[in-house]
Length: 284
Length: 252
Ligand SMILES: Nc1ncnc2c1ncn2[C@@H]1O[C@H](COP(=O)(O)OP(=O)(O)OP(=O)(O)O)[C@@H](O)[C@H]1O
Ligand SMILES: [Mg+2]
Image 1 (spheres, chains in turn brown, cyan):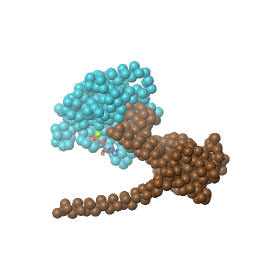
Image 2 (image 1 turned 60 degrees about the vertical axis):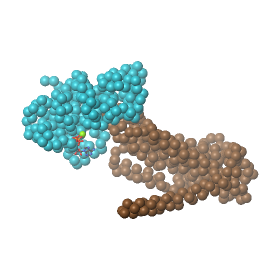
Image 3 (image 1 turned 180 degrees about the vertical axis):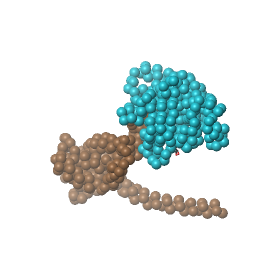
Image 4 (image 1 turned 120 degrees about the vertical axis):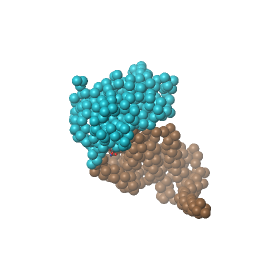
């Protein structure tokens, strides 16, 4: 009797949970479907590889794609090493005192700060104060600053998940602390660190606000030549063609959105694959 | 009289406010096996973990008193802890090879000591595995992941890894507690052989093991060293009633 009752309860619970999942997933699926349906006809090699023409109503989105790739790769050059070393310091060296606790708290809070704040910060610091101007460098640094807290948190977690005994053994064998981190902790934390870094980059690729004032150009007839040039970027381009340019074909808008989502999505998948691949391998 | 390898005087240890070792005084002699026995939680691990300063890793750990290694206070400011740990090796309770190949587990020690010569590494891998009585079982599978070995093999690999560093002292913290009788016998045999060239300290819960392998034995109870003497004295004619009760199994 009791058994029947518990199974019924369980069924109800499962149904409710399933319904909640559906409510979360359905809109996302709908958006994806709409973009895919609207954008797919626009996607072809010419769209991906040529400059925009006719006031961006015709032609491709090549410079925006390139700009986004530049921004993301340059930003990771700054954020990954700094974030990683900060995480190593916090997790492996720092004493647990008021100062480090404040730092940790600050990092967690910074990771939740709205991206437009980072945009304004980048404008003030990199564009104006350091006089990098509106440039790829300023934009990449702004994205890097925005990503740092996320990378630090992910890296700290990855380091903390390496068993304490690895450190004990390594030190007991006469390795120094740095050697212990370098040879015995870090290799086992790399998958987690990479996953975190890629996910944060995917976010960076899709953000508009941080690049709005620091790098993004409305339209450039040429590709950027150096990191001190302005660049077009996908999210900003999408914003422009959706709001500032009348009479543009909808499939160009949807196509641009589709490319942006495609890039972000494949980065996320890449991160998941890395994680899955290493999870199978580790068994301590 | 021979100079003791370790001379510990008035050692007190704390985790936070918890007082876990109380005024420990003990001399550890070279080329002998010293066994430490006592009920769970009495501070044996804390004691040996303060001999190679591995307890420094535990942030709440604090100690007072002196631990002298060859007349040098290892807690003095100018001590090179890395060098100390090279000379005072440790084998832990749970076998803990790195998730690397058997070969790389041992090569790790040489790598961190800056040895890059492949022949030297090969030779050390072989000689340490031989000393740890594991060579014959693994010589054809050195590239295999160490985690695929049995528990007893893993523990012998850990011993081989410790030997590869060429320490002078080896601390064993219940090295056999997760092993079957055959592996245990192998490790005891090994300890017996290592005694010729090393100073050994072994924590064990197994009275027969302490009696079999050790020359000296110390009995800990609630953070105090109740009695320390030659092993046969401790086991045949203990001076303290509490030692006798523990050895004869009257409390645990
Ligand atoms: N990291 C720690 N933090 C706080 N207390 C600890 C810590 N490690 C050990 N203790 C406490 O210190 C006391 C001594 O512990 P220790 O591990 O030295 O005992 P032991 O004799 O080795 O016991 P066992 O035979 O169970 O291994 C115990 O009361 C234990 O709870
Ligand atoms: Mg113990």
